[in-house]
Image (cartoon, rainbow, N blue to C red; front, side, top):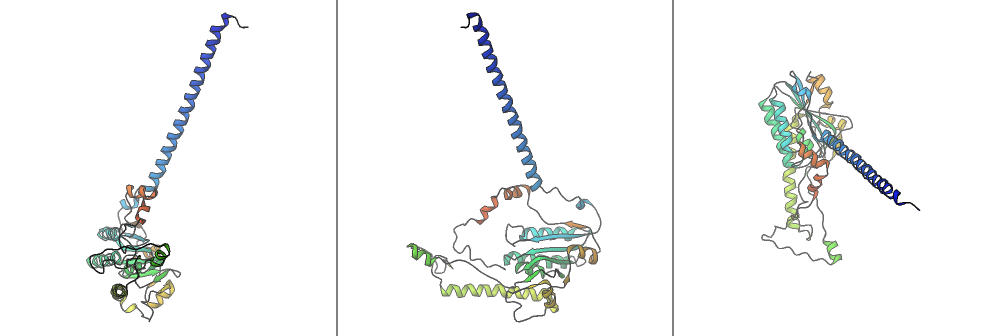
Length: 318
């Protein structure tokens, strides 16, 4: 049995042990806090490295150069290949006194006929305004439909043997759910002011009159597309019965048909034709906020339906 004289020593040891444990716990928390703060800092640095355009030092240099503009992906409002971004890049490239020539680097399946038309018109305007500056289109994997609509405004079109070129046509797609609704016992209640306000409503039976009108719209846009191709390619075009049917061809076939001019790449055009090997990228890129939002998946919001009738039934050069 312990004597009373030992009690103060026992209490002191217990207090020391508690204090030591508390100190150890604080040290562990502090270490974890430093670790998490460091991890967050590394993450933020990595995100900034991905989303920030640190600039091209070559753009600060003077002298002759080949201006390159990348038209990539679907041509649509607000996208990477929107008319706003492409025309802005074209204007900057043509206005630069050091530009020996402009290369429009295309890899696109097509998209909006309006956006494609705006880009085509701007190319023609700039070529007329700066006749001393040539513009050549260089096709990579694909230059179809709206992409080709843009390309025909160029002085010349260069392709790879395996490139996919053409698809000179227009489509309007959507879905019909009337059969599914009947099986589920769902009744469609659509109220409109104007007999055609529910034009091509996917939840209503297809109206033949509206279908006929939609085909007229497509035929008119298709006619515009054909005229632009004929105007751009001129006598080089070797028309065939199925040239404007929506079919696509390889790069080698497109040269034979006059849809393209020759084989080439961005580097070969700059080096062998423009005689200006230095490449400057004039492509308009997203700002920091836009890139950050896309990296975090915020761009998924674009795919949400706005609940508008016929939202999916939009004419596209695809």
